[in-house]
Amino acid sequence: FVNSLSDMFHDDVPVEFIKRAFAVMRATPWHTYQILTKRAERLEALSPELDWPDNVWMGVSVESQTYAFRIDHLRRTKAKVKFLSVEPLLGPVELDLTGIDWVITGGESGPDAREFDPSWALAVRDQCAATGTRFFHKQHGWFVVGNKRKSKKANGRLLDGREYNEMPDT
Image (cartoon, rainbow, N blue to C red; front, side):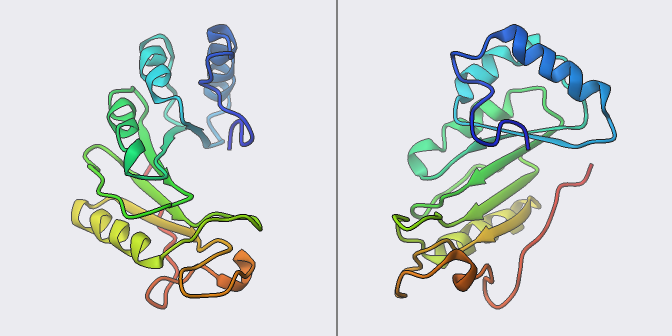
């Protein structure tokens, strides 16, 4: 997972740095790299300048319906595998999954986590099933609607009594 605590497509990250990172990823095809960004506009703008190796999976965060526009920017990149991180899932979302290979859902972590309703993730699961998009549910998070605040481990990751661990075909 590249830049897990930062964003490679932040405005302060020089284009030459991004190109060097992509060159390293291209030079190591035995690894699969996942890059996640909230800067979908910059991602799309820089996409034609990048040499996209097949082992780079590109994703955008879509934590609520407000940010679903990021999907259109991702769709217009040259990434071979495109994914959505719908976490922390903060409410119900309707997603256009055309051209999207994988969706990850999850609730928010930490003691100040906002509520998570598993029905929101189930609705995303159903949208994925309707389009043939792979679905992975990561966790419920710290605060499940109707429950007391518990750790994400205690709340678990089961949806309708099962784990969802699908991965994209590569």
